[in-house]
Length: 319
Image (cartoon, rainbow, N blue to C red; front, side):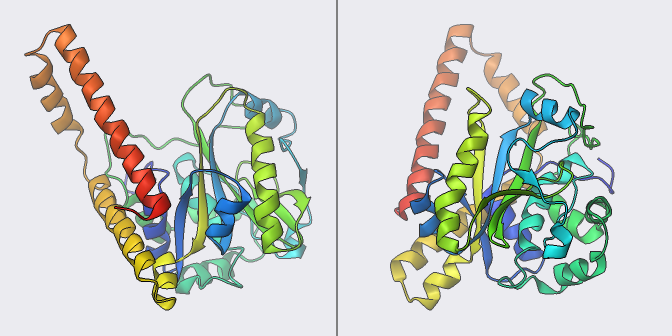
C-alpha cells in the first residue's frame, strides 16, 4: 500500500463513529441497525441518514451497463439547485467513508461539521459530482483518518473503481450507499450513480422512519437469496444525550459500548497475519484431521456465543 492509497476498513459502527469524530464532527455517532423498521429508527431519533452496505452483484452491473440507470426511483438531475450535496465515488476503498460524508454534508443545518468538513464543503461548492469525488479521494486529511482504522497489509491493494460495464463474477465486491430525507423526499446517494436518486415523498422525520424501511426492503428484494447486507444509522451522540437527560442506566450502556469500540479499533490498527499463520501452523501440525475439525467447530461455537452476547448488550444495554 502506497502512502497515497486508501486501505479497506470494516463496516462497523465504532469505526465510523471515531472516524467522524476525528474529522471534527460534533455530537454525532453511528449505530448498527439489526433490523430496519420504524420502531428501530424511532428509538435512535434523531437519525440523520442511513448507510446501506450490500454485495454489488449481477443486477447492479446490468443497470450500470444500461445507461447507469437507478435500480429504483428516479434521477434528480436538478439536485444542485435544491441544495443537495453529492459526490461520485472515484476510488473503491474510499466508498465507506464517502457514503458517510454524503450524508453528513447534507445535514450541516442540524450537524456541527467542524472546521475541516465545513471548509471542504465551501471549497467544493459549485464543482460537479465527479470533481467533488476526486477532491475527497485526494484529501490527505480525510485519507489519513480513514486509513487510521486499519493496518497496511501486503495482501491489501488499492484498486480503481470498476467501470459501469464491469463484468466480474462473485468477486466479493461490496458497496456503500446512503439514504437521507431532503426537500420533501427520501433520496438515495450512491457514488457510482450519475445523480442522487429520488424515492418516495417524505415531509417529516417520523415519515422518514416509516417509509425508509419500505425503500430499503424493495432494494433488498431485488437480490433474491442474497443475505449479506448491513445497515448503519447516522445519529446524534447517544452518550451526550444520556448525560443531558441524566439517565444513569443509559450512560452506563453507552460507556460500555464505547469501551468496546475503543478496544476493537485499537486491534484493527495492527496486522496480526504473520502471527496467526505461525500460530495455526504450530497447532495444526500436531493434530490429525479429525482433531483439527473438532477444534474449528469449538471455535465457531464460541464465536457465535460472543456475537450473540454483543448484539444483546448493544440492543438492550445489558452487560
